[in-house]
Amino acid sequence: KRTNFRNILKLLFELPLSEAPPNTPAASGSGSSFVQPSEPAVNRPPTKPPTVRPTTVQVQTPSPVKSVTTNAPTILPVTAEPTTPRVPTGSPIELSDITQWNDGETHVINSKETSFLDESIVVTRGTTFLLEPGGYVEAPLNTNWPAVRLSIGSMFAGTGGAINGSYADPSLLEGEYADGGDGLHINNGQSSDVTGSKGSFFDGVVIVGGDAPIGVGGNALYVNGFGSEAKIYGGSFVGGKGAKDNGYSILVQNSAKVHVYSGSFDGEIKVDRSAEIIFYGCFKRDRLQVSGTFPDETYLDVSIRTSYGGEITLMAVSEQECDTAPSMSPTNFPTVSPRPTPKYNHGDRKTQSFVEISLSLASMLLFGLFWI
Image (cartoon, rainbow, N blue to C red; front, side, top):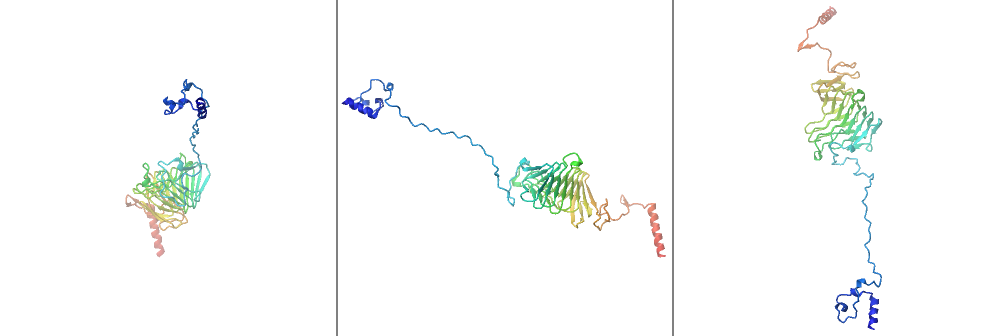
């Protein structure tokens, strides 16, 4: 019976005798109802298949996330009013902040959607840029690039809108660019008169140099290189304001020419290195100051500096009658010049010639005969 009872327990629990707890009677060897096996349990085949233990769930290692490029803007779109403060793009200007037009076509800016903020435009290779009312171009902060740059036979025409040079924000200075940027450059870019760029300006367009609270203000209009030429029929040209010095309203250099028929100019003008500026109307020059009126009766009073062969020409026009000089037809003499006067030589009046004396005697004789 005991043997049968042991076999029943063995079948019920199916436990090897070697796995009995240490405190069981079989383990202690006294009064045990279990008999110690004659051979080691490790050599005895199991009475049932071993229980399968739960295995660790195999989790797939996630692969690195791939960056997805989208067309969504990284910053908020430009609002109607420029956000303040704006962030500089670095010095020198990054290529991503330059838009280049070099396809020889005509590009028009005449609305907010077509305008540029924090961007410079380079117009080259015979391309034309038209700026009309409602359009504007404003250069990035703290850069030495102009807002618009023309070269290699390109053309600009402004009938409205505004061009603003780079503002030198002292709180965001990077590098040494503490000076304001220029508004518009008209350059040659090569060594031929044919590749000189041209610009035309009319009422309503505004060209402004960038301000510089701790540096030098930017120039409004810069015309450079032989063959490059600007014709100003109107518009406003404002040099940037600076703590060290203000920018020029117009800077002309290196054999370039500027023809001025009208317009307003806030800031000095400089004519340098064989360049020339020509004013059409009734003007007079007193050292550095040129003043007078254009044919449209717009008044001019501006300081002009010249150096290294720079020239200032005051030209009379046929449609305007000047008080200071005859103006029936254009002449190469400054309009300030009165009718011809006796010449002076080293401060003394020049001695009259024989012809001049004969004419004087003849006039006196005729005058005497008239009264006889």
